[in-house]
View (tube, rainbow, N blue to C red):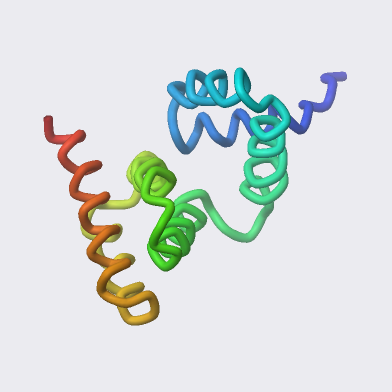
Length: 127
């Protein structure tokens, strides 16, 4: 009988599926400063929420891009989740449509910031 995967390992697996193996270096950096925050980041959203049935990873990332666009200020996190959305099957056009849709609710300044962030991510993939 196989032992049940720990909450942390379950979250880390989900993060790898979204962000790729590079996520471990980012988590290591965060853990050096705040190990408790790093653990909470892995265990709550990614082990408890992102593993729930009902929505696939693509849909979850689309919703996350929308939420971060509406918030307007977390551009570093938006950048990571745009990368994640592309990694789990979103197209660049879908990302831009999400941002355009959010302009209705968040306003043009938030959408313009998000488009700039998306352009930076898109530029990485074509470089």
